[in-house]
Image 1 (tube, rainbow, N blue to C red):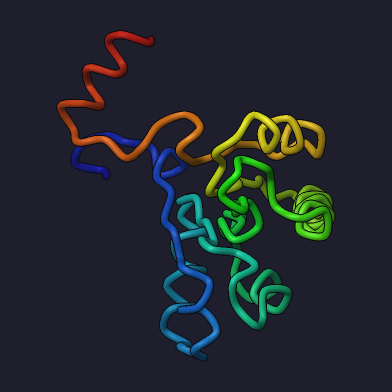
Image 2: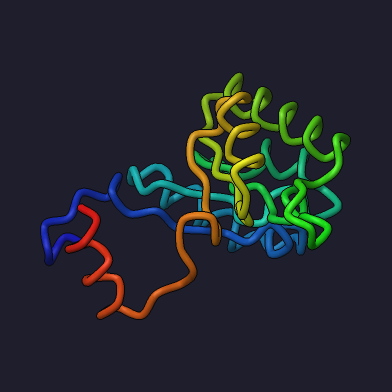
Amino acid sequence: FERYDIPPQLIEVEIVERSVGTGDERLLEVTKQLHEKKFRVAIDDFGNGESSLNIISEIPADVLKLDQKFMKSDGTGRPASDDEYKIVAKIVEMAKSLGKETICEGVETEQQIAFLRSVDVNYVQGYYYSRPLKQEDFILYLERNA
């Protein structure tokens, strides 16, 4: 990053939640060092593990990326259950109170977008906006839509 004069706060390192629960002290130490050097740290697949709440206090994360299981539809285009929406709303509320941003993965429908806006999720990721793109397709996408 220094070689290319990129400020570290523009680089986000993702840690998959299940890797944190392994008790790997080295992972915790490296994550803390990255955060101290102003790199952004995200916990990916948040809510998918058994110790999500413990992880928040152990890892100095800036971002919680909510696992896509909260947004899974039943195949008809309807959003996930009301219980899952309530869980998402509370996770977002908790994250904001701790000064963390939120990203919700697996977003596919207008109904999901409307809900996530209503609970003030910072960012969304999913097929609603785009499927994964190859580099050349991404450049074309930017040229057409930017």
